[in-house]
Length: 129
Length: 129
Image (cartoon, rainbow over all chains, first blue to last red; front, side, top):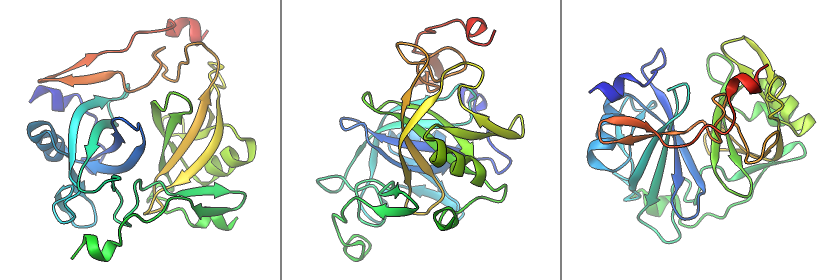
């Protein structure tokens, strides 16, 4: 598939993929994709990432139920970063983070320390039973 | 500085940094930061990245004038991705991309091809004189 050849994969065969929520425009998370993950994401219309820790394809929400419908896939000027416009499913308000928070970017720099500024919406032990 | 030790730098000493525009909430770009770049960004309140192609600190806008005021710095759950909330300066409407476009994510997947869906707001030859 030619469109996949336009992507500049890094030396590990990966690119960063940003998930931005449609509606709120919140940046929910950044994960990684290899060629198969991006192809699967486009085919299914649901986010499939490459889990670097597990070394395998990771259909986001496969354990948590917190899947992501992908409405749009964008590529940046250098061809080495992907941006997804998603609907985050499985909880209302939406949870993208494995800590049970809405967004993975819940720590904000305040002077010389990181403050957690977003609440846990659901106990992770109840997400990953 | 202890807060910098909370960041999980990759094997090259870098983390991806997403710049999101305050107001529009548009994701403008993703660039990379090393420890010095993040420290400088926090100190100045302006985005300073690590240019992987040039192998040096890159004060965004140093050539183009398209600087970024940084209102907020966030860190994700794994500590290996940074999110900046910025005001993009130097042109109205704002230009973050070296191609003269608002956002670097101007290519959208349409079936099996990438379509450029954002206009060039200023000729790059006029940006980088």
